[in-house]
Image (cartoon, rainbow, N blue to C red; front, side, top):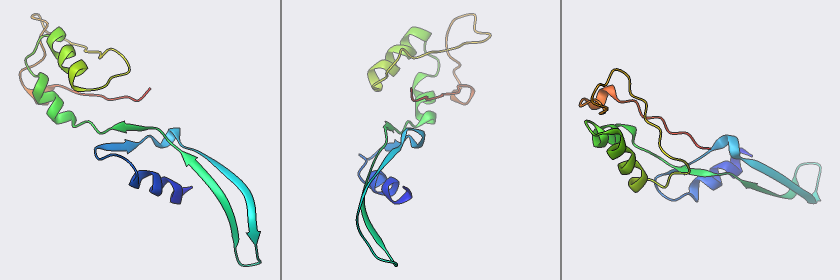
Length: 109
C-alpha cells in the first residue's frame, strides 16, 4: 500500500497532494507464487486536493470586506462549498489589515 501511495503521489499534478484518509486499495488474485515470492495485481486510489499557500491567501485578503474576501476566494480556487469567514471584534466587518492576524483553514470534504 505504501508503494502504491508513492506511485500515486508521483502522478499528481504539481501543486496537489493526496488526501491519505481517502485512499483505498484492492488486492487481486495471486498470479504466481514460490516459497520466496508472490506475484499479484493490486490497485489503489485516493483523492487529491490543491496545496494552498495559506500565508499568500492571508496577505491577499487582508483589509478586505467579508464579501470581497469571499469573492476573491471563489474566483481564485475551485471550492466545493461557499467560503466561511468568521470575524471577531470587527465593527467595520473587515478582515484585519495585518495578515498575521488572519488564520486560513482548508478542509477537504
